[in-house]
Image 1 (cartoon, rainbow, N blue to C red):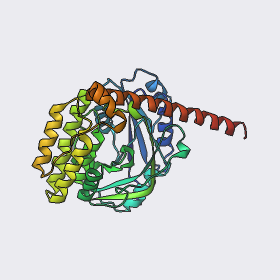
Image 2 (image 1 turned 90 degrees about the vertical axis):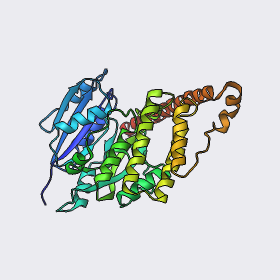
Image 3 (image 1 turned 120 degrees about the horizontal axis):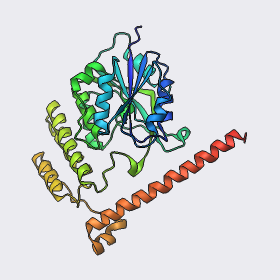
Image 4 (image 1 turned 120 degrees about the vertical axis):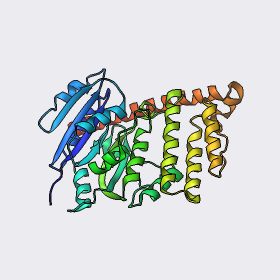
Amino acid sequence: MTRPLVSILIPAYNAEQWICDALRSALAQTWAQKEIIVVDDGSTDRTLEIARQFESERLQVVANPHCGAAATRNKALLLSKGEYIQYLDADDVLAPDKIEKQMLALGESPNKRALVSGSFGKFMYRYYRTSFIPTALWCDLSPIEWLIRKMQLNLFMQTGTWLVSRELAEAAGPWDTRLLGDDDGEYFCRVLLASDEVRFVPDAKVYYREAGPGRLSYIGQSDRKMIAQWISMELHIRYIRSLEDSERVRAACVNYLQNWVHFFHPDMPDLVRRAEEMARSLGGELRTPKPSWKLSVFSVLFGEKRAKGAQVFLTKIKWFFMQNWDKMLFQFENRRIKEGF
């Protein structure tokens, strides 16, 4: 079997706490034919300095002015030479045999239009407690069936799970730099449009570090992120209808709009109105988003905008305590292991 070169592309921004884990997992890949390209997106911490400690013939580090995740991935892709592309976020980790299992699943004469996915599990600090919970996307599917399930059931596949041939990457085009979040969702929609099939390899695992409100895709009350999210949603709907414009597709699109419209309400009434108009054009109707029962009294007393602000604040507080608790347990359990308990 020929061993095609796989390019592992790592965009990095202020990831000094995690970049070592990501780079070690890339270097540990059992698929020998690999190159690793790290593009630092103008980090203001020690990310670039730490990444350069790993530089070798196999691992290249490039410093770039700050321009966002999508543009940074485009830069890495331009620098790459591999026949296959593996994206890896700087705070995530690949299982050592992730790429090899996917390449072997493609066979000796791979169809370059086959898109390969794998399983992912979420963790904060204690990666050894990662649970891999299957969804309706964890199986072999046609591109249209994959998109219907994603939009109907509000599912996603984490960025690092995919292995993409260069042929598919070139057919999809560059990452959309307008998108501040969900840039991966929109990008892989275009990859799917160019694909013949999606092959799922269950043992090809990715460890996805949960960042909560700290993640780039978190919308909160950012007008810019809401507008970018709406652009991505319009594109999703256009893409899936270009493959099939059936009743089941339109129903999936309406459900997709319903699942996301609460992110715009009540801060961006124009986007809510546009979502409602689009749903009607698809033959459906959106329900008016309402605050959770916990915040309903707050909403009556102080208004919906302040209620949403309170919800955003409480979410950040919750995640702060969850992450610090998990970090404390991680440090405690590691100390016990080192001391021989």
